[in-house]
Image 1: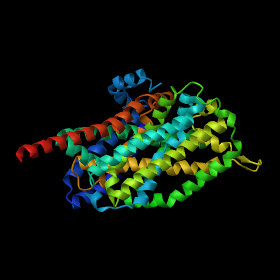
Image 2: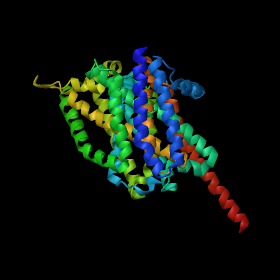
Image 3: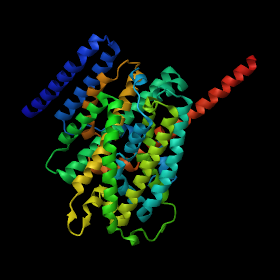
Image 4: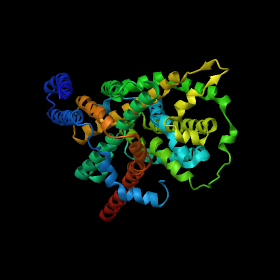
Length: 83
Length: 373
């Protein structure tokens, strides 16, 4: 449990460092949209990192791509381009 | 847009294209091809370069039809604002998940299984991601210059690998030629172009940064063919020296190839020096991917500056590199099946769709002007 907390603390510290590095520049230049996209990406990064730190196996997003591409993959296998 | 001001020369673009072509392929491609086509893998690689010729021609045609436009801008012009942005976003997100993260996974996997078995892959990935993020943040001019600087070293290592391994060649390893007919050639050739040429679609993001369009076309073409032929030689050497079975069974055949170097029992164990070669090519592949993806995100959301997005994206990149493949069999399944259909859809179907829409729009606008006149 303690190790989990330290890892998450480390992730938070890293995120804070990124904020200190990037946000003043964006505020100075009044880059409002950039700030939005930046915040969403950083939230996503912190979220995924923490999830990975708390739980060893989180589902791979490649499974979704596999599911979407299944008909096309099957077709290519059928005509012999994928073995 | 930042991308409009920065300029790289045609030669720098050629070097970047060559390094992007060789990229992670030099480490992983011979194994899968030897598994599919056995001793004929080198023929499949030649077929792959032939199809790469056509693919690069398609990309060049699109880039020439819309000069000074990146891929995302071309998609938006042709498909309209909302559909274009949606398709671009889907394309970029999936490319991020399967492109640069896989390169980073390869770096970690290679180092921890072959050179530093005690080190966790995550720490290697973090170190590598830091320099990738640095390169992408400093911009294309900077990393194009560093590519130009490192390219002679890369070529030197490549040539010394080829020359030093040449005495080990056994010609009987490629016999009998075309034992199973030409059937197994096609899947092996597809796996070749799926790593070497189909991801070149992302280079259309940096195409407009080249100072002259005719230079860019020539550089794109020469770089791809140069890289492709260098890879044909690597595949052929792996088959000639190790034989098809050993090549198919080892995960990193070119590293195994470098281990085989032994000149008079004196010059040997130089594989770690040779590994510098793949670090250079893997680094530029990852950096070009990340730069193209970040630029694409900035253009999809109409941002003025792409740089603030790189650090959070780098953080996601590191986590994803240990998340995407739960284990090595999953990675091999992915590389052998879904990766092929995915890259075919973005690298062949998407550009063909764009060309079709371009032609249809041209015909419609012609008809409209004719009916008016």
